[in-house]
Length: 337
Image (cartoon, rainbow, N blue to C red; front, side, top):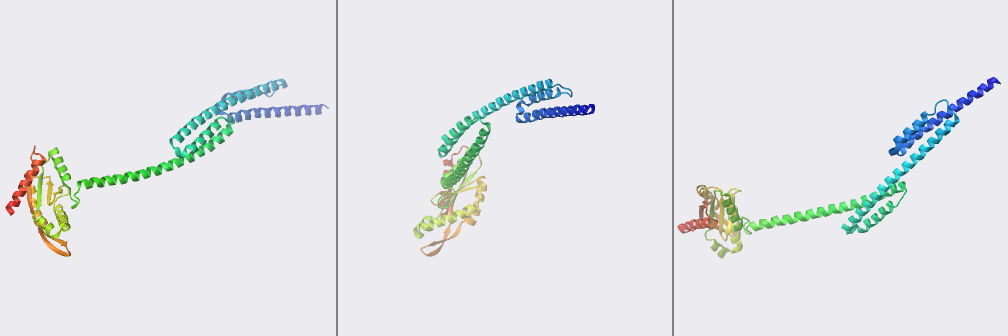
């Protein structure tokens, strides 16, 4: 009997020890998992439960266990209250955010009437989300709304991209037309050389900058006879051929233009002596016979010109400079006659 009693006592002690160990393990697990559920309130909750766990030594009375269990329950109740308050606070922040997004979506819809109805519906949906109390439903609704918003925004972005590309194309077209208009405004329609307006602009620029430059004036000889005998189309062809040859003997930086009718002008950035030295090239390479076609026949037309040269001097106006070149040109014409 004594041995049986000792066996029963030993078995009871082992069972109590096992139950206490299990109870302690449950308290420790509850503190860890509870902290994962809501990390915001985790530190105090874990510290309190772990403290209650340590209070359960190897020798405790049923009264001590019951008191400990009541304290554990109180900690869970306190944790549940704080967790609930925290989640409600976050839900409230989400609701406020939803209202802001709803107002923003509504404003976007007002600015872009193409999506007015879609954004109006989206705005109403966001306001409905703000009335939800279940955080899980709020999360699911927010994810769904975010996907809808992304779809709307992607469509608007694509349409905006296309609109920008179309606008760029139109701007490029207008710019090309503007450049062509500007070129046409400075080019002679028949010869393609600088026109009188462009030549005057180049002379004004040099005068304003105080540059050293000279002008050469050319007046084709007997050009009226070409027009009278072969017609104006042949005369225009002659002007084009002469212009091409004249431009070829000067530098790209020199201004070669048609002054008007059968008169041409060249503006060179050099002194009069150097400008006159270039005239030998003109006489040798530009003057001569040109081939023309008129009335189904071919003609050889000799081409030469009276030439006048003048160098700009400080204080001299464009008009006075041209008068000096004209005077020299007509003197050359009279001399050759």
